[in-house]
Length: 375
Image 1 (spheres, one colour):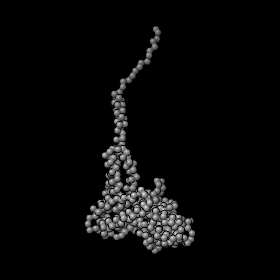
Image 2: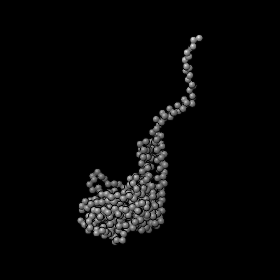
Image 3: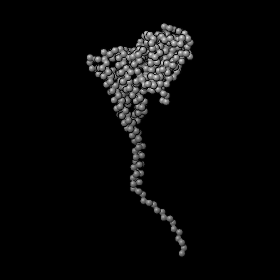
Image 4: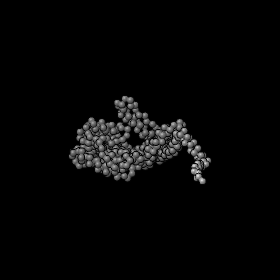
Protein backbone atom coordinates (compact mmCIF):
# COMPACT_ATOMS: atom_id res chain seq x y z
CA UNK A 1 0.00 0.00 0.00
CA UNK A 2 1.35 3.33 -0.98
CA UNK A 3 1.73 5.69 1.97
CA UNK A 4 -0.28 8.81 1.59
CA UNK A 5 1.40 12.13 2.49
CA UNK A 6 -0.95 14.19 4.62
CA UNK A 7 -0.84 17.97 4.74
CA UNK A 8 -0.78 19.47 8.26
CA UNK A 9 -4.15 20.76 9.32
CA UNK A 10 -4.63 24.54 9.19
CA UNK A 11 -6.37 24.97 12.57
CA UNK A 12 -7.29 28.51 13.58
CA UNK A 13 -8.58 28.96 17.14
CA UNK A 14 -11.75 30.98 17.48
CA UNK A 15 -11.26 34.69 18.26
CA UNK A 16 -12.22 35.78 21.76
CA UNK A 17 -15.11 38.20 21.98
CA UNK A 18 -13.50 39.77 25.08
CA UNK A 19 -10.28 40.48 23.18
CA UNK A 20 -12.19 42.17 20.39
CA UNK A 21 -14.07 44.31 22.94
CA UNK A 22 -10.84 45.37 24.66
CA UNK A 23 -9.32 46.30 21.32
CA UNK A 24 -12.34 48.41 20.43
CA UNK A 25 -12.30 50.19 23.81
CA UNK A 26 -8.56 50.85 23.56
CA UNK A 27 -8.88 52.24 20.04
CA UNK A 28 -11.83 54.44 21.01
CA UNK A 29 -9.99 55.76 24.09
CA UNK A 30 -6.92 56.51 22.00
CA UNK A 31 -8.99 58.43 19.45
CA UNK A 32 -10.80 60.36 22.20
CA UNK A 33 -7.48 61.21 23.83
CA UNK A 34 -6.14 62.53 20.54
CA UNK A 35 -9.22 64.72 20.17
CA UNK A 36 -9.55 65.90 23.79
CA UNK A 37 -6.02 65.61 25.24
CA UNK A 38 -5.56 69.37 25.47
CA UNK A 39 -8.87 69.84 27.25
CA UNK A 40 -8.12 67.03 29.71
CA UNK A 41 -4.74 68.57 30.44
CA UNK A 42 -6.34 72.00 30.92
CA UNK A 43 -8.90 70.62 33.40
CA UNK A 44 -6.16 68.83 35.35
CA UNK A 45 -4.02 71.97 35.58
CA UNK A 46 -7.01 74.10 36.58
CA UNK A 47 -7.78 71.72 39.45
CA UNK A 48 -4.21 72.06 40.70
CA UNK A 49 -4.30 75.86 40.40
CA UNK A 50 -7.66 75.92 42.18
CA UNK A 51 -6.23 74.01 45.14
CA UNK A 52 -3.29 76.41 45.39
CA UNK A 53 -5.62 79.40 45.07
CA UNK A 54 -7.57 78.22 48.14
CA UNK A 55 -4.29 78.03 50.07
CA UNK A 56 -3.25 81.53 48.97
CA UNK A 57 -6.66 82.92 49.89
CA UNK A 58 -6.31 81.48 53.38
CA UNK A 59 -2.88 83.13 53.75
CA UNK A 60 -4.24 86.42 52.41
CA UNK A 61 -7.12 86.34 54.89
CA UNK A 62 -4.70 85.50 57.70
CA UNK A 63 -2.58 88.53 56.79
CA UNK A 64 -5.64 90.77 56.88
CA UNK A 65 -6.74 89.34 60.25
CA UNK A 66 -3.30 89.65 61.85
CA UNK A 67 -2.96 93.24 60.63
CA UNK A 68 -6.31 94.29 62.08
CA UNK A 69 -5.61 92.56 65.40
CA UNK A 70 -2.14 94.13 65.67
CA UNK A 71 -3.48 97.62 65.01
CA UNK A 72 -6.21 97.17 67.63
CA UNK A 73 -3.75 95.77 70.17
CA UNK A 74 -0.81 98.13 69.63
CA UNK A 75 -2.36 101.27 68.16
CA UNK A 76 -5.38 101.56 70.49
CA UNK A 77 -7.62 103.18 67.83
CA UNK A 78 -10.88 104.80 68.87
CA UNK A 79 -12.76 103.12 65.99
CA UNK A 80 -12.71 99.88 64.02
CA UNK A 81 -9.66 99.96 61.68
CA UNK A 82 -11.05 97.23 59.37
CA UNK A 83 -12.26 99.60 56.58
CA UNK A 84 -8.92 101.45 56.62
CA UNK A 85 -6.94 98.20 56.45
CA UNK A 86 -9.04 96.92 53.54
CA UNK A 87 -8.47 100.19 51.70
CA UNK A 88 -4.73 99.97 52.40
CA UNK A 89 -4.55 96.45 50.98
CA UNK A 90 -5.84 97.71 47.61
CA UNK A 91 -3.08 100.30 47.27
CA UNK A 92 -1.09 100.32 44.00
CA UNK A 93 2.00 102.04 42.63
CA UNK A 94 2.42 103.39 39.09
CA UNK A 95 5.97 103.44 37.73
CA UNK A 96 7.11 106.66 36.04
CA UNK A 97 7.22 106.74 32.24
CA UNK A 98 10.47 105.32 30.85
CA UNK A 99 10.18 106.29 27.17
CA UNK A 100 12.66 109.06 27.88
CA UNK A 101 14.96 107.56 30.53
CA UNK A 102 16.80 110.80 31.37
CA UNK A 103 15.95 111.76 34.94
CA UNK A 104 13.79 108.71 35.62
CA UNK A 105 15.66 107.93 38.86
CA UNK A 106 14.66 111.24 40.42
CA UNK A 107 11.06 110.88 39.26
CA UNK A 108 10.98 107.40 40.78
CA UNK A 109 12.48 108.69 44.03
CA UNK A 110 9.87 111.44 44.24
CA UNK A 111 7.05 108.91 43.81
CA UNK A 112 8.59 106.60 46.41
CA UNK A 113 8.90 109.46 48.88
CA UNK A 114 5.22 110.33 48.36
CA UNK A 115 4.28 106.67 48.82
CA UNK A 116 6.35 106.38 52.00
CA UNK A 117 4.87 109.58 53.43
CA UNK A 118 1.33 108.46 52.61
CA UNK A 119 1.83 105.05 54.20
CA UNK A 120 3.28 106.64 57.35
CA UNK A 121 0.34 109.03 57.67
CA UNK A 122 -2.23 106.29 57.11
CA UNK A 123 -0.67 103.95 59.67
CA UNK A 124 -0.36 106.79 62.18
CA UNK A 125 -4.06 107.57 61.72
CA UNK A 126 -4.99 103.90 62.16
CA UNK A 127 -2.76 103.40 65.23
CA UNK A 128 -2.55 106.68 67.16
CA UNK A 129 -1.32 104.94 70.32
CA UNK A 130 1.74 103.31 68.74
CA UNK A 131 5.32 104.47 69.26
CA UNK A 132 7.60 105.39 66.37
CA UNK A 133 9.18 101.92 66.23
CA UNK A 134 5.78 100.25 66.50
CA UNK A 135 4.46 102.42 63.65
CA UNK A 136 7.34 101.25 61.45
CA UNK A 137 6.61 97.62 62.33
CA UNK A 138 2.88 98.03 61.65
CA UNK A 139 3.66 99.62 58.29
CA UNK A 140 5.86 96.65 57.39
CA UNK A 141 3.11 94.29 58.54
CA UNK A 142 0.54 96.01 56.35
CA UNK A 143 2.88 95.94 53.35
CA UNK A 144 3.35 92.18 53.80
CA UNK A 145 -0.44 91.77 53.92
CA UNK A 146 -0.72 93.96 50.83
CA UNK A 147 1.78 91.74 48.97
CA UNK A 148 -0.25 88.63 49.88
CA UNK A 149 -3.38 90.32 48.56
CA UNK A 150 -1.66 91.14 45.26
CA UNK A 151 -0.40 87.57 44.83
CA UNK A 152 -3.91 86.22 45.49
CA UNK A 153 -5.55 88.58 42.99
CA UNK A 154 -3.03 87.81 40.23
CA UNK A 155 -3.32 84.03 40.65
CA UNK A 156 -7.12 84.31 40.80
CA UNK A 157 -7.08 86.42 37.60
CA UNK A 158 -5.22 83.79 35.59
CA UNK A 159 -7.27 80.97 37.10
CA UNK A 160 -10.61 82.58 36.18
CA UNK A 161 -9.33 83.66 32.77
CA UNK A 162 -8.11 80.14 32.06
CA UNK A 163 -11.38 78.65 33.28
CA UNK A 164 -13.38 81.04 31.10
CA UNK A 165 -11.40 80.46 27.90
CA UNK A 166 -10.12 76.90 28.56
CA UNK A 167 -7.00 78.03 26.73
CA UNK A 168 -4.16 75.69 27.60
CA UNK A 169 -1.45 78.32 27.15
CA UNK A 170 -3.13 80.81 29.51
CA UNK A 171 -3.50 78.08 32.15
CA UNK A 172 0.08 76.90 31.68
CA UNK A 173 1.48 80.36 32.45
CA UNK A 174 0.23 80.39 36.02
CA UNK A 175 0.61 76.62 36.50
CA UNK A 176 4.33 76.68 35.68
CA UNK A 177 5.01 79.67 37.96
CA UNK A 178 3.04 78.42 40.96
CA UNK A 179 5.93 76.57 42.70
CA UNK A 180 8.11 79.71 42.59
CA UNK A 181 5.26 82.02 43.56
CA UNK A 182 4.33 79.83 46.53
CA UNK A 183 7.87 80.15 47.92
CA UNK A 184 7.50 83.93 47.93
CA UNK A 185 3.94 83.81 49.29
CA UNK A 186 4.95 81.54 52.18
CA UNK A 187 7.84 83.90 52.96
CA UNK A 188 5.46 86.86 53.23
CA UNK A 189 3.15 84.75 55.35
CA UNK A 190 6.03 83.98 57.75
CA UNK A 191 6.85 87.71 57.80
CA UNK A 192 3.53 88.47 59.48
CA UNK A 193 4.81 87.09 62.78
CA UNK A 194 8.16 88.88 62.48
CA UNK A 195 6.65 92.29 61.75
CA UNK A 196 3.96 91.96 64.41
CA UNK A 197 6.42 90.99 67.14
CA UNK A 198 9.37 93.10 65.97
CA UNK A 199 11.64 90.13 65.27
CA UNK A 200 14.79 90.44 63.09
CA UNK A 201 14.32 89.12 59.55
CA UNK A 202 16.69 87.64 57.01
CA UNK A 203 17.00 90.91 55.11
CA UNK A 204 18.40 92.55 58.25
CA UNK A 205 21.66 90.61 58.30
CA UNK A 206 23.55 93.54 56.75
CA UNK A 207 22.22 95.88 59.43
CA UNK A 208 23.20 93.31 62.06
CA UNK A 209 26.79 93.31 60.80
CA UNK A 210 26.93 97.10 61.05
CA UNK A 211 25.35 97.02 64.53
CA UNK A 212 28.08 94.64 65.71
CA UNK A 213 30.80 96.90 64.33
CA UNK A 214 29.42 100.17 65.80
CA UNK A 215 28.46 98.77 69.20
CA UNK A 216 29.60 101.02 72.04
CA UNK A 217 30.34 104.07 69.87
CA UNK A 218 28.42 107.32 69.66
CA UNK A 219 25.88 107.51 66.83
CA UNK A 220 24.57 110.44 64.86
CA UNK A 221 21.89 110.71 62.21
CA UNK A 222 23.45 111.35 58.81
CA UNK A 223 20.36 110.97 56.59
CA UNK A 224 16.69 110.13 56.94
CA UNK A 225 16.45 107.14 59.30
CA UNK A 226 20.18 106.37 58.97
CA UNK A 227 22.65 106.53 61.88
CA UNK A 228 26.45 106.39 61.69
CA UNK A 229 29.31 105.95 64.12
CA UNK A 230 33.05 106.67 63.75
CA UNK A 231 34.94 103.54 64.77
CA UNK A 232 38.77 103.51 65.04
CA UNK A 233 40.24 100.20 63.90
CA UNK A 234 43.78 99.12 62.98
CA UNK A 235 44.89 102.71 62.36
CA UNK A 236 41.89 103.45 60.10
CA UNK A 237 38.71 105.39 60.76
CA UNK A 238 35.57 103.44 59.89
CA UNK A 239 32.32 105.31 59.40
CA UNK A 240 29.81 102.54 60.01
CA UNK A 241 26.18 103.22 59.13
CA UNK A 242 22.85 101.40 59.21
CA UNK A 243 19.14 102.13 59.36
CA UNK A 244 17.84 103.44 62.66
CA UNK A 245 16.27 100.65 64.71
CA UNK A 246 14.73 98.75 66.28
CA UNK A 247 11.64 99.54 64.22
CA UNK A 248 11.25 98.11 60.73
CA UNK A 249 13.21 100.57 58.62
CA UNK A 250 15.65 100.63 55.69
CA UNK A 251 16.30 104.38 55.58
CA UNK A 252 18.15 106.09 52.74
CA UNK A 253 21.71 104.74 52.69
CA UNK A 254 22.40 106.41 49.35
CA UNK A 255 21.77 109.83 50.86
CA UNK A 256 23.86 108.91 53.90
CA UNK A 257 26.91 107.90 51.85
CA UNK A 258 26.54 111.00 49.66
CA UNK A 259 26.38 113.27 52.73
CA UNK A 260 29.45 111.65 54.30
CA UNK A 261 31.47 111.95 51.09
CA UNK A 262 30.50 115.60 50.70
CA UNK A 263 31.54 116.17 54.30
CA UNK A 264 34.83 114.21 54.30
CA UNK A 265 35.67 114.39 50.59
CA UNK A 266 38.88 112.68 49.50
CA UNK A 267 39.60 111.34 52.97
CA UNK A 268 37.36 108.35 52.19
CA UNK A 269 39.38 105.65 50.40
CA UNK A 270 36.81 102.87 50.14
CA UNK A 271 33.11 102.09 50.49
CA UNK A 272 32.06 98.63 51.65
CA UNK A 273 28.38 97.63 51.55
CA UNK A 274 27.03 94.54 53.31
CA UNK A 275 23.67 93.07 52.37
CA UNK A 276 21.74 89.83 52.15
CA UNK A 277 21.81 88.15 48.73
CA UNK A 278 19.72 85.41 47.19
CA UNK A 279 21.50 82.08 47.18
CA UNK A 280 21.45 79.55 44.38
CA UNK A 281 20.15 76.04 45.00
CA UNK A 282 22.99 74.02 46.45
CA UNK A 283 24.56 76.96 48.30
CA UNK A 284 24.34 77.10 52.08
CA UNK A 285 22.33 79.68 53.97
CA UNK A 286 24.76 82.01 55.73
CA UNK A 287 27.68 81.57 53.33
CA UNK A 288 29.60 84.81 52.81
CA UNK A 289 30.97 86.07 49.49
CA UNK A 290 32.98 89.16 48.53
CA UNK A 291 32.59 91.20 45.38
CA UNK A 292 32.75 94.56 43.66
CA UNK A 293 29.94 97.12 43.45
CA UNK A 294 27.08 98.36 45.60
CA UNK A 295 25.37 95.53 47.48
CA UNK A 296 21.86 96.90 47.86
CA UNK A 297 18.48 95.76 46.59
CA UNK A 298 15.27 97.66 45.99
CA UNK A 299 14.14 99.47 42.86
CA UNK A 300 17.56 101.02 42.28
CA UNK A 301 17.25 104.61 43.54
CA UNK A 302 19.61 104.27 46.50
CA UNK A 303 22.00 102.08 44.52
CA UNK A 304 22.16 104.75 41.81
CA UNK A 305 23.02 107.41 44.40
CA UNK A 306 25.82 105.30 45.85
CA UNK A 307 27.32 104.54 42.43
CA UNK A 308 27.07 108.16 41.21
CA UNK A 309 28.64 109.58 44.38
CA UNK A 310 31.41 106.97 44.41
CA UNK A 311 32.20 107.81 40.79
CA UNK A 312 32.20 111.55 41.53
CA UNK A 313 34.77 111.14 44.32
CA UNK A 314 36.60 108.23 42.65
CA UNK A 315 36.08 105.90 45.62
CA UNK A 316 36.18 102.13 44.97
CA UNK A 317 33.07 100.12 45.85
CA UNK A 318 33.43 96.75 47.57
CA UNK A 319 30.62 94.41 48.58
CA UNK A 320 30.07 91.61 51.08
CA UNK A 321 27.03 89.39 50.55
CA UNK A 322 25.45 86.97 53.01
CA UNK A 323 23.60 84.25 51.09
CA UNK A 324 20.02 83.30 51.97
CA UNK A 325 17.04 81.60 50.38
CA UNK A 326 14.19 83.69 49.01
CA UNK A 327 11.92 82.21 51.70
CA UNK A 328 14.19 83.69 54.40
CA UNK A 329 14.29 87.30 53.19
CA UNK A 330 11.30 88.60 55.16
CA UNK A 331 10.84 85.59 57.47
CA UNK A 332 12.28 85.58 61.02
CA UNK A 333 16.08 85.40 60.85
CA UNK A 334 17.27 81.78 61.11
CA UNK A 335 20.25 80.89 63.36
CA UNK A 336 22.49 80.29 60.34
CA UNK A 337 22.11 83.91 59.24
CA UNK A 338 22.61 85.25 62.76
CA UNK A 339 25.86 83.28 63.06
CA UNK A 340 26.92 84.43 59.57
CA UNK A 341 27.06 88.05 60.78
CA UNK A 342 30.35 87.32 62.58
CA UNK A 343 31.82 85.79 59.41
CA UNK A 344 30.71 88.88 57.47
CA UNK A 345 32.44 91.15 60.01
CA UNK A 346 35.65 89.17 59.46
CA UNK A 347 35.27 89.53 55.67
CA UNK A 348 34.81 93.30 56.00
CA UNK A 349 37.87 93.60 58.23
CA UNK A 350 39.96 91.54 55.82
CA UNK A 351 38.90 93.78 52.93
CA UNK A 352 39.87 96.87 54.91
CA UNK A 353 43.31 95.49 55.70
CA UNK A 354 43.92 94.39 52.11
CA UNK A 355 42.58 97.45 50.25
CA UNK A 356 43.41 100.41 52.53
CA UNK A 357 46.36 101.89 54.38
CA UNK A 358 46.75 103.17 57.91
CA UNK A 359 45.26 106.64 58.25
CA UNK A 360 42.58 105.98 55.61
CA UNK A 361 38.88 106.49 56.16
CA UNK A 362 36.42 103.77 55.10
CA UNK A 363 32.63 103.85 54.87
CA UNK A 364 31.02 100.57 55.97
CA UNK A 365 27.29 100.43 55.19
CA UNK A 366 25.06 97.70 56.57
CA UNK A 367 22.10 97.52 54.20
CA UNK A 368 18.72 96.01 55.01
CA UNK A 369 15.60 96.20 57.14
CA UNK A 370 16.71 96.81 60.71
CA UNK A 371 13.57 95.53 62.45
CA UNK A 372 14.47 94.07 65.83
CA UNK A 373 18.08 95.34 65.56
CA UNK A 374 18.82 98.35 67.73
CA UNK A 375 21.71 100.63 66.92
